[in-house]
Image (tube, rainbow, N blue to C red; front, side):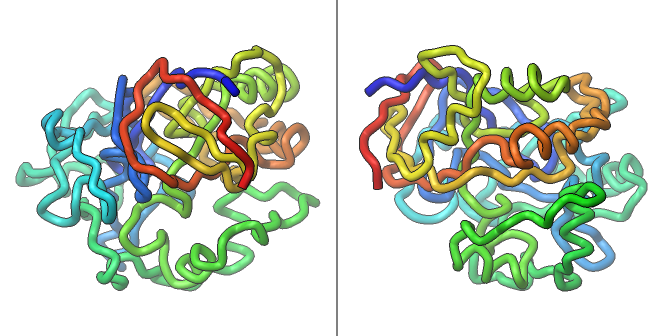
Length: 305
């Protein structure tokens, strides 16, 4: 059954920075080629940083430097582009128009000056290097509430649908070891959901605010949360087979300014998401079969789980 077409593919080479829209990519169980293979670290405590705490990161944009041969590789296990020295370099485009390259001396100092904080720039570390991913301080209800911009009187989000292995990893680490994604390897969103939130919430619901990897245009254009109906189903896009696990709980990031793409802060975003989609938008995705996908590929429903 045809559900729609793959409209856009997004990768974000540096965690919490703006990314790049690409025409094709390879995918394995760790996610999309070149996605979140670098991160900015707090130089004082060596903790991985993110835009929930440092929203200025969203004003930068990163682009991966890698050959088509590297990007076309599809290893069965492990990060698509390796770890440490095997991770390709990136260019970081600053809000003032400057460009920083990860392998250039002085980049960390320049990035620190831009951010007003002492930072390090680190490639993905292997999963065995747990200390690289460890939290500097344990998460609390108060810190989680601040990260998601919990509104007065709003119920605390229900995380019970998250897999136990992810919750155990996030009890000690910023991200699951071996990855800079927050939990699931892929995030999928439909154009219908963007239309729904824009119409019902009265906000600027554009794709850059929600940072999906895969933007799907359904066969039927409707203002509704279409992908929610795909949960527990298996889909095929190009060579790739994915399973839709759960709805994505949204944090404070969609409301933030993003200078790299001209987006201003959207102060009513959290309220719109709470009132009109229970603070969920898009879905979390597992990868069942590695392969290549491209813009224009059909999105096919295979079966339920």
